[in-house]
Structure formats: C-alpha cells, structure tokens
Image (cartoon, rainbow, N blue to C red; front, side, top):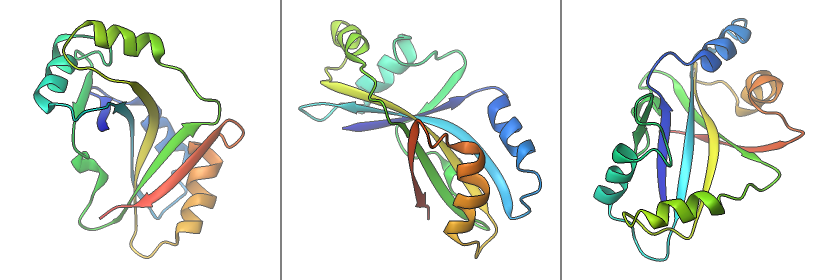
Length: 156
C-alpha cells in the first residue's frame, strides 16, 4: 500500500471559500484541502516508478495543475499551532476497477486496487478541544455527514 498526497498547484477556491465561511472561528489559523490516493498492491511499489506514472501519464492526476507527494505534505504540520488531518470517505464505496486496469496496462506499476479520499489539513490555536473542532469546523462545513464519514487525527 502506498499513499499519494495531491493538491492544486494554483489557488484552491474550495479552501478559500471554506476558510471565508469559517472566518468567525478565531481559533482556526489555516485550512488546506488535498486528496489521498491509496494504491493497493501485492508487492511493494518502487517510488521511482510511481513518480514516473504521476509525471508522465495523466491516469491518476493532471501533472500540469496538480502537485503531489509520496510522503505526508509539510503543510499538514505547523510549529506554532495544533495540526489535524481530516480524512473524508464516501459512505458508498466507489469502484476504480477501470482506472486500475488502465494503470496496469501501462506496465509502470502493478496495483490490485485503489481508493481516493479528500482530506483537509487544519491548524488551530494550541489547546482547542477536538470536540470543538468537530462541532464548529468539521461537521458544519467540511463533511457532509449524510453521505460521508471522517476521521480526525492530530498531527505532530
């Protein structure tokens, strides 16, 4: 299994709009939107081959407007604020069988399955309770609890 973190190279209007909607949340310092693509395999993947897939082909991301990292992005952590990662998953499973087949036909990597979740990086003032983050930031705006589930994990 390998996680690929992706985010827009240009201005992210979704994140800007979400931050504007939460402007009254004075403990909120920053908000970042990104995606996590998880590739499932029977054998470990060579990071160089994954890098090649992401930069030379557009079957997973558009390399012209999407940045990526094979490790957790630095924007998920802040030295002065408490950092959280909000991972959002659809309640209805999504099949990526067609995309898996296309990726495997390229003979760059071989995967058995993949998932794609959207996520948010959240920086808040130190000492804010996790329940306050859920009640004032997460559930009112960032997650549609009717069709999505989430996990909120405190960062380093």
